[in-house]
Image 1 (cartoon, rainbow, N blue to C red):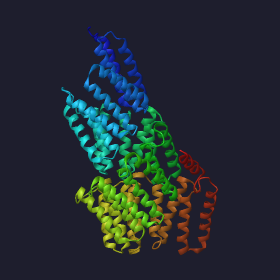
Image 2: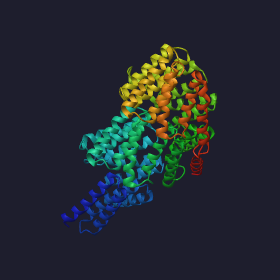
Image 3: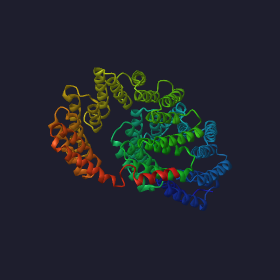
Length: 612
């Protein structure tokens, strides 16, 4: 029976419409269009085999749309329907594609062995089938690469992803979305191994292709923005916030704020807020994230591990160390149950626990836990990896906190040696920058000012390569150098870096900003012991700016009054008590506000998270 051309064109048109909606992240719309196409195929007067092929392909497409919404039972139902049709047709490639789809669902359900088995069966069928099916084979390689990445099997993952990319670059148009998909996955791989520059290279390649093909308003672009934001956050770049905001706006517009993709933004912003001391906001976002993921996956899923870890970070930041440890241990227990005892995820988290023990002054527990992190990381990645360097840097922090300066120096030197061996003598990653910062601090503790200053110069040099000569990140480095400097040479070592920080901030932020108010306060501190009048001038500028931007009843305002009082005490004791009284008055008014100390909102959010 001849196939009517106009009816098949209708099916193709609907299929392409569904695919476009799927690629843009409109998964509900894609599912609706695929269902309509499926109904249309059923009614068409066409050859049975052609109808069956379309029914098989549309069921698989429908399953993918459901899987992206984490409606896994519906996804499996349509995969089974597709599989029955493919088997009736004896079509080996379509049977293999069904196995790939089962493997993807298995992966989400944490059935990793079953997932790998299905991928292997699929690969076997595809490689034994003659014809032009290399792109189909690349799909299975890609899926296996993502599976190994979920399991933190780093070397296996890279091998599979490289194979997938190589085939796709050879067989597909250079602007094909499947090539962008490989770049995205490789970006994740490089970030996990902490090669941030390569991660950004891959993510930006993926982003450019997705923007060129789909435009700027789709879930694939939002995903890129979020992942680039994660790398920026690790690199201490302020641009992370902007990336998260762009991703969140797209996601909210397309799928709303109660989906998995939204939960990813919530957890990233929560981590950012923790670093900025905005604990109430971080707890609120973590609660949203956990609720969404528990509803989607249940309470014991791999995707609940990270929210628990970051909640632990939030408690650690509030100096509630016991609760932080409970959160960390719960997260590690989940990860170990799913991935096995020696896994890269838990290895990184042992370092968090070690630092919390260090904060509790439990030195032996801290060092033994950090050593566990180091040992597992070396087993999985080898001795010369960025994550091993990070573990040594953590060990150095623990030793330094216990005033074991030589041990701290040795551990940091090991970290630096590994990084420079990976990057070369002119290495300029954020990891190298942080090690030079730590080394400067350690040499200062050893009263070796000359070497400390040399490390500061290295830190600044690497920072300029990372962030540019005039950026807020470089301003922060100048600020930290000034803060850490001693009072030699009339405070010169403190004043000059703080002044450079101020100049950069004013160029970028204008004359009024919270950061600038804080820098004026730092300049006041730098001048206080040597140039009291100059210090008072800086404090007055800081004070006026804080009051204008935050209001008079604010802790920062009270702190500046404290500094003014201490400075006035040196030159004009008559005004000392008046200034102290102002600071005390502000703190009394703050103490009657709900936001003082641990707010009622904090308590409520913490209780909700614990209940979850």
